[in-house]
Length: 196
Image (cartoon, rainbow, N blue to C red; front, top):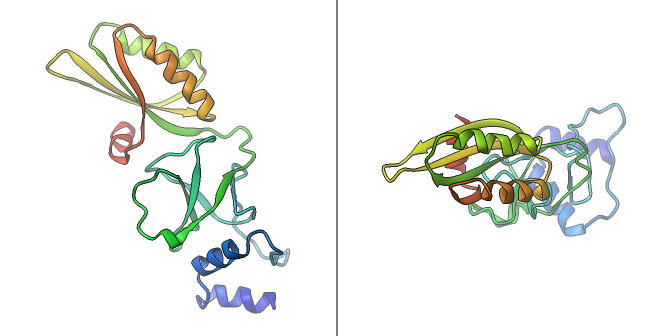
């Protein structure tokens, strides 16, 4: 019965990992729905887990997936499902992966860190900021480091709507004078440095 299942989940006899694995094995077959008086965490509309709603999900801060990236869910202990990019390198337990897809993300934005390498000059940061402002993206943080060879590395964390907008931004930043490399930063250490 549904009440027995919910009680078993509540006192820990059945783990969320076990439920996710069982759902993955059976695909999108009939799913038991909770009674209407039970409050269940809501899945953000931007992510669908195995075609099922009402699951607690979080977007990973390590690889920072954005709408349009190929993604996979990772069943965590006590924190629901964390959504990572499929090229996420730290997969410790592959059996805890579940299929997820991007849903209707509406007005959602996603933080992503862009790395810009350039020859140092007066006005470089202003020119980069102007490109980002022209694309109407919010700049969350900026970290710049000047090197001995008169080059500068700039990490800008911005909020984008998806991969298409990110691609446009990267192309426009490549056109800034004295910039010789632009790429999306995917390592967690650089992303953390840019936010701090």
